[in-house]
Amino acid sequence: MPAIDLIQIGPLAPHLNATLQQQHGAAALWEQDDWPAWLREHGAQARVVVTSARHGCSAAVIDALPQLAAIVSFGVGYDSIALDAARARGIQVSNTPDVLNDCVADLAFGLMIDAARGISHGDRFVRAGRWHQGPFPLTSRVSGKRLGILGLGRIGEKVARRAQGFDMEVAYNNRRPREGAPWRHEPDLLALAAWADFLVVTCVGGPETEGLVSRQVIEALGPKGVLVNVARGSVIDEDAMVEALRDGRLGAAGLDVFRDEPRVPPALTELDNVVLAPHMASGTVETRGAMQALMLDNLRAFLDTGKVLTPIL
Picture 1 (cartoon, one colour):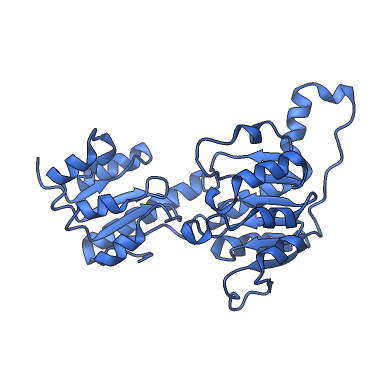
Picture 2 (tube, one colour):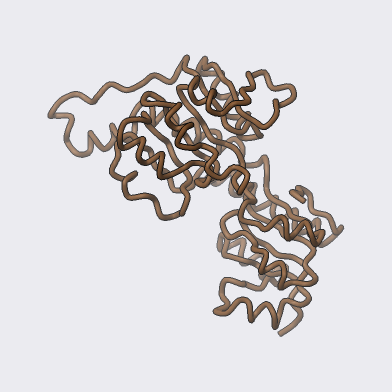
């Protein structure tokens, strides 16, 4: 086998897999039955790992690649990449930020409207022939309500700007105020939840935010509140959320991400006050095309210049 310069952790779109293999000689790690043994035998010269937010890159993989210099990832999230291990070795890590912001914000707002107005519930109601038995229950207005945003980054800002068109009052929770942001910074997440009619989660995943939307935060949002998550399932105490939705202590939820995807808690699938989406926020033709282009640009920039274009590290 010739020397391997690039290792691909997991499959991407078929045409992208083909491009990586044909143009860059990518070796498919996911096809190896015993990948640690395969890396020990073939990974000595590999300089680049290509991965995604879904597949990540573990410390074990990094440790097995002594010449690794760059991890090029498809997706904006990086909680599945062992950043500490990469940082200790001076390995560059890139993602695909910005190009997906609008589509993720669109879906966040769609989930919020659906959860409040019961659009998916109404669709099931009509399809099941239940309209003949009586009117659909009243739902909640979105316009003019209070929107809390957990994590006013690039995506959170897009959500906030969309809320302006709905005449919503916006406040956000970050570790520190966002310079130049026109919305109110609320340093206490519990206070933000108690104030808000809607709480939209757009913060990063990972250990620092795990369980940040706690049982107490969910209780503060309350029986009329709506929780929307387009970030990572780990950010929410999922067990507490399921219990609160089931018992009426949380009004509704719109969820695109889950703690153990693609396994969704069965209790959620039985509830009409929950809108469930299959981690599809960036899943548009336009956005995925832009993400693929940026990932390849990062890879080619590193191979040509030794520097990625959109570094995390």
